[in-house]
Image (cartoon, rainbow, N blue to C red; front, side, top):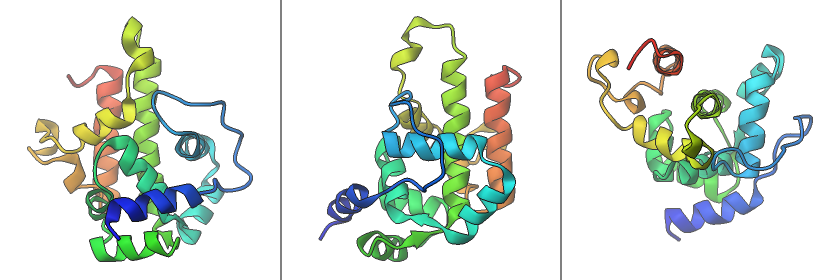
Length: 175
């Protein structure tokens, strides 16, 4: 079975965590399950995030993120520090993955989504933020010393640096 087939099967099994607010449909290209998770991370209190980090999330969520970001599941898993073989096994068995990694990616998606939501450009409604983020994390960024954001997302400090850069881009402080 290929990674894509495993991803597809696991995505079909993903159920959003109970207790999160109901999704109001799609937001800038995000699927409803992923949208639900991104919204919940965006508004969740720290103790709820801590619980999610400790319990982990279904591997299918990472598969959904990868699909929406238009990058491979194994590439996204490695980006957040999960070896390819481990990621594929967890996905095929519908096991949990590192919750902190999923939360970090959800935060980045939320920031990117907010950037588009704040835009006054008429075409912003049709802009695919997840796909843009997938491309952006793969490009060298001068503000990160020429490194790609994807190279930094495997540690909390790296996630903080990438989050700060996206925030600076959002505010217009970095162009």
